[in-house]
Figure (cartoon, rainbow, N blue to C red):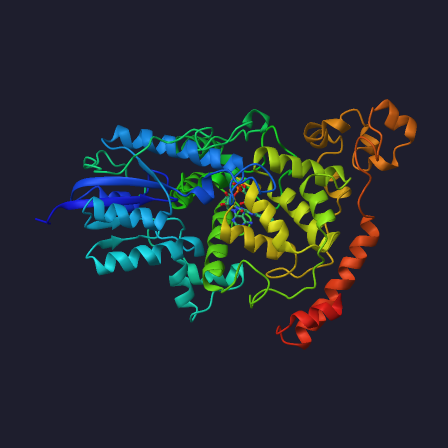
Length: 516
Ligand code: FAD
């Protein structure tokens, strides 16, 4: 019989009971199991210098979503004879202290490919190796192990979706049930001198004046994730016919996609379980869409970006990133702030940015619209600045997916058709000619007639007066002329592409300055 000992499961993402291999293994062969979550003050506590309410790394909506997810996890753990232990501090240091204090012999945590976690994990792994602590760290945040795919491709990540799909094949677990439930956990041991807290409220973290915050309508936690998943899967026809990029980005009462991204981000939902549920639906219908456009195909996009991100040094920046075109983006804080604070004067763009701030989630094509506008469509501002704003405001903010999509949208990598620019006027109008989405998120324009709702600056003064919205006073004039700005963006991109080609991608700062 295996020797029994004290074990620790360190929750970071993977905030769930279902399909959680680390927890599954930890549930066996231990006298005591300590389930730990570390509150990292940089991630959770207020930072007055940040551009909107929140911590150094996250906006308030995402912090609250995480707290809700922790409350839900704690409740689920209690139902199987355990509880969540919360400690505060530098996560690697706290875990190392706990390993010592609680005499831990086995440490379990979900493998994570993000640089932030890789750095933490290497500190913890060094300590564990030197102190005889066994580590079990399975891959369960993604469908595939990014390292396997990169190995299969000779050490380089595949850079197209199709080559990724070919290399990936079928996930090995896809035909056996991944979501076995855990009926009981070993008891939590004596926590010694550690001051364990309950999951704090947002006020207890030090946030005040939060009555002014517009909270996202999406609640965190595994229970909510599984409920949303069940609701989506119940509509088999919708799942079978799902086809991206079709779908209405302006649908806000009932979003056109699943809104499961925040739950996948924190691992409240297992992407592998989601994949299996989709397979089940596909078995029961006569016809269904296929990757890349199907829902299953969306999960593969997620894995694609995880794989490229893991295998690309400096994936989150332009410099030193060999898959990213070097482009002389402009530095313009006034324009950047106008975009970020929903003051561009283009109602379609501004309404999306308001939804992003209030809800922490926007439709994929809405992300396309505002990302294109900021970068290669109109303002020619660096994708890293847009990435930063998304990273802060999104509740689904995900290092690999966010960086990958910003490079895509700015024609810096993956996609290079710079002639295909989203019009900040006609694109939204196609879906929502009456402008209901704009009127909802920009109530200042609620009485603007639909003829002018996408271009209110063209409304005669008498109409503006009647709508109680004077352009330039109550709502801004457009910060650029889209026609002129988009032509200028294309010209600059053509020049930059030529330079990248001529210099074989090895472009210096001086080369870029010469292009400006
Ligand atoms: P669904 O259409 O229901 O898709 C199901 C799941 O598939 C999603 O939850 C997501 O995990 C995955 N998925 C869907 N589209 C993509 C995609 N293009 N790339 C990778 N995975 C995808 N998604 C994030 O999860 N986090 C981000 O930080 C993020 N930043 C983005 C930034 C930009 C500029 C753009 C254009 C897209 C970004 N996306 C991001 C991708 C995509 O827009 C969202 O995943 C999707 O809109 C989430 O809504 P959903 O869950 O309803 O998606």
